[in-house]
Image (cartoon, rainbow, N blue to C red; front, side):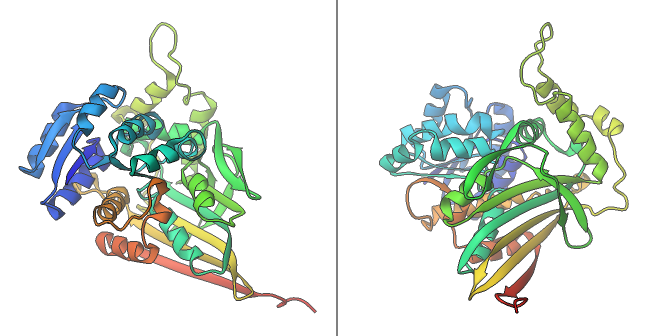
Length: 396
């Protein structure tokens, strides 16, 4: 088997570092626009790993890279730029594809705006999108809770992260501006609707040590794929927030000041988006926009809430999990996305993913087994809570 790992940033490198030692019988190629980065990663991983340069904007480059490949994992973000070109090449080459796409408009285009699903089925391949931590693990946890109910009507997802802009790469900042500005996909009253990014504030009751913190609409793939693959849902929402709250105000100011604009400024050939994407991770930004986190959690919290019915009673089930922030001085990343991606890739390699076409995390793995595998691999603690209200309890 031959696997192409595209993208040698934080996620791509860490997926490769996890996957290659566990599956030494596979032949790997790591690829990036920066050939030196790919070569350094390949040299670290061993003799069964080669390195090539690939430009996802160049179809000839992609076609050459996919020659003889059985599976491509795409970690080259932001995905609203990279996913569709790479998927087009994968369908043409009849190569299975998996990514960690976290842009709502990509999921919408692949499922509803074109013949991608039909062409992937005709090619006999699987195109699996959103296989990271969010979307990815969030979808699987949601499906796990849905499976405990007779019917599920609503899914509410939320994430809270410390406001440390310098920890994000330029590609992540580009993505974050894309999913928090303009109109973002949510699902209400059984229909897809567009909501203002960074609007729709809701105070989320996270478990300690977080407590109640605000969340705002974002455009992630969950609000597109969950209603499509889990029938009967009437509402799916997704929110994110920073702590302390000053971080939310700063981010709102970026949006209001037009830093999501990708049009080059006349005379300097630099867009506001390109500037902010490169400025925020810089030392200058770190010094200018630091906030006091000394008394706050050094973790990220994910919360999945599902509403439905079981045995005639209304049920509200919540699973929350907290993941410690990475310590830059340790050289070890606690980012859950590479571990999630590696587990999805392994499920595909083992032949556990059935069906072809455009697929998402919630229909690719056994939810309970996947969550247990992630918890074991990451050491993460999952906290569950459930409220049941019997019908007629308050009726005369």
